[in-house]
Length: 464
Image 1 (cartoon, helix red, strand yellow):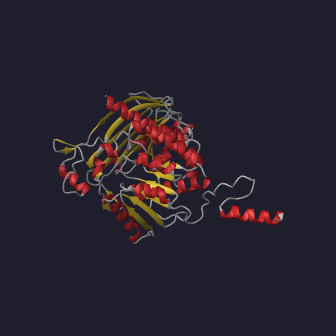
Image 2 (image 1 turned 120 degrees about the vertical axis):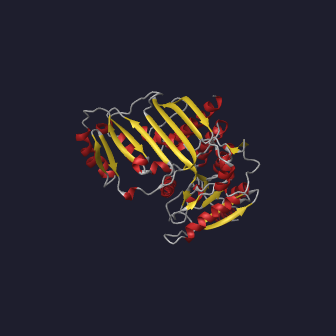
Image 3 (image 1 turned 45 degrees about the vertical axis):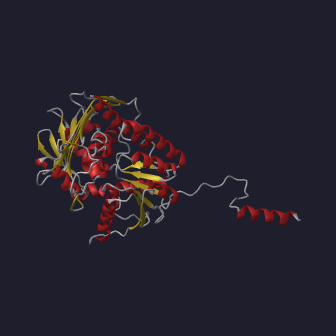
């Protein structure tokens, strides 16, 4: 047989087998480019309303078909109802098409079919770390609601998940909405201006350099409707305790504000000083109201006729030598006209930056600048900071003098987009990271440091 004909037949055989005959290394699969519809979302076992909030907006880069894999039960239907409401609303309706599979083998089927390339995970936290691990192991990107892990025992599985994600070239990221809250963004920005803030104090356990306190409520409104909580939300073993749930945001903000773009190592940079936990007692009637159930399920812990989720917690710790305090409180319902509240203070050598959200602020977050010394020169330095730094990044922001040494930061309404809108902002940022093919160098180590902090706090509190 002639040599050219032999070569041609060999090439045809190799092509038929799906093998290239080139001696060069095969090109890696193309990554994300930002093209319309290239991101295909899989929603895995949605049980928390945050899963739907990711879809409150449409994204050009995201395909309108979303593949939902979940067990049989009300959680998935509640999720579909929320997304359906977004599709049917009068103003800026979405156009999602939910392709649903429900069955006991939902996780295995999701991995087997791989109909999408980004898994959104927001639901029962007891299984979340395992869901994350299985998804990245299957070569799928993951956008996960907090917390990624709720027990010290599962922290090593999260560490392994990040390692596998790196090996498989996929991005594992958690939804840190509070980085997009305008008062927090300005608190961070002002803390980086030495002429205003000075330097961050080191603080003590009795008087920490930075304190963040968060108050939440089981009965609340979301997207204009009374929020229906799943029953497992009140079981600390499934939802996670306050020290590892809401506190995730607060630990993240401390890292993000105090040490911007710096890598936080653990355990070296983290020293837990104290931690405690306590429950929020709920009556049977209160439980029924927020779950829409006729009775308390047998698998929900009850003591003396009350449901007792360990939703409250406090931790004091040092991070890179700076003393910080975090407190999370859950009440049943906020007083009329109020809602969830946030308090935060960063203590500098020249000024304290304080976010308050009490009655004086009409229960809306307000940022104050408070001089440390009575004879402070802030009167002179603030105008320059406003025009040269803050004004350029946040046009329209001004300062109103309240009294000697105290100013209120005036923020235009255009920046106050609200908590629900922050989910779209986080998603947009994540889509950008997919195009880049990587997260910022500090994000992964700091996510791990964050969850090390929360799980170590829980470990200490349990031992008290």
